[in-house]
Amino acid sequence: MKFLIISDIHGNKDALDAVLSVPHDEVICLGDLVDYGPDPSECIELLKNENIATIKGNHDNAVASKVDCGCGYKYKHLSIATREYTWGQLSIDHMDYLRGLPLYIEKRFGKKKIHFAHGSLRSMYEYIKPDTPEADVLEMIEGVDADLIIIGHSHIPFIRHVGDVAIINPGSVGQPRDGDVRASCAVFDTQTQSVQMIRCEYDLDLVCQRIVENMPHADELVDILKRGY
Image (cartoon, rainbow, N blue to C red; front, side, top):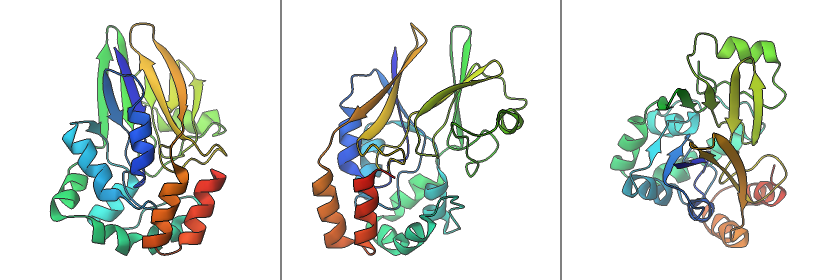
């Protein structure tokens, strides 16, 4: 079975469509469907209609529960500035959907146990990055019974090994932070136990046009998408 792993869509429906075109048998989304992008309702509707297993991200929680997003990035002000726009796009059903998302997903394939989360395994707000000190990562995953941990949140794709555990981040679908403007995702093959990182082209100019026409702080939002960080 091939699992398509996606994360951090952030209201970018065109990027979401692009990654979903990658051949797969099943999809798991690691959260952050909303904020920053022009199409939060369309992204939610697609995931709901396709019955895609989805984890609650910190931005989903912030939008649905009207609390701080707890962002560690310099773009937190844009999350706050675009919040009214995002609320204006979402129905009561969309808000209920975001509120009801689980914090974690666990799956087992043969003897391998996989733990899916948005941030660290302790919190949706904590970051595990490629350069996070190993001692810090070990503390975050202490007591977790898993062979493979798959997370999002940092928007940076990577594969690293800490102790006996492999940690994978598929990167961000709609808001890359590694300098590559293409939508990012990963495919995990349960038969070969291999992971493939994939980048997908999409119509970035069209998304930027919708941002300019509809959203506050459009110039800054567009610049971020066109830089890929």
